[in-house]
Image (cartoon, rainbow, N blue to C red):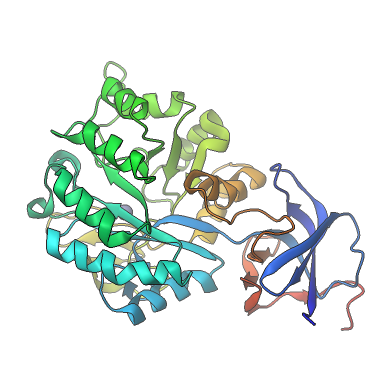
Length: 384
Ligand SMILES: [Zn+2]
């Protein structure tokens, strides 16, 4: 018989986006019961906040390890770093590389998606604008080529869940349609698209904007570009890197207020996340992390973040975002955007749960029912 574990919280994030007291029962790798108010059973653990495990749909690595590799151990180590921090669902993002390297990385990662260590593969590039390349090497950027796209889709065999591309490139709109037809979520990013080009990409099936504001044509009041179009278009989910570095706190607050449930917090974490300052690689690029800020050595561009999503939530709340909105945008927001079985505390869903203290620091992590971290208090009515 499977043992039942009962978690209670003063504030539980419910699927409707509200926070209210309640409890969650877990058996095996599934949530079996939930309820508002006092638990029906003695609680094993009790925390001020209970939320679904965080879902990071844009993440390059962590703990000194990168997803841009063909070594499964390296992928495991990077994913495990984020799992332990409460991000129980991690999409592995690859940066632009030459065609052969990218194919080999996709082939190496695909079995790990099927093994549920990572939730999917995100190709960030190589079809990006040279004008907004950020931490992607110029020589790795190219125009979308149907043959390369088909080869990558075949190598991924259903595990590529999202691509980031610049739709204004020659062949860009055709690439959007090709990926959407293959069931891949298309994100517009690292782009010089104007507002009309962004809308054309959305009409072609794009549903996400990659890290709004960063690595795209900037907002100007006479040239609103992709930013205003993304804020206004209800068909788009909007990624935001909330680390206190990529986007000013006032802009974070304004963006969340104007897009509400369409915001998706992403880490865009590189290998230096949850690790010490120092030298790391981001794909083929050398990156230096100083005081937790990652920059490329070649052009000093910000090169991903050192975030984990729990800190993104706290940083968002410190910027004035409501707790329920911040938690929702790190859980159900990304899960819904990618169609993942995650991000909801409801019976039948995978038992991915985080317990947080009053400062929203992670105290308890369950992933697929397995306890990865346990600094929580025994529950009221528990046997402690
Ligand atoms: Zn990225």
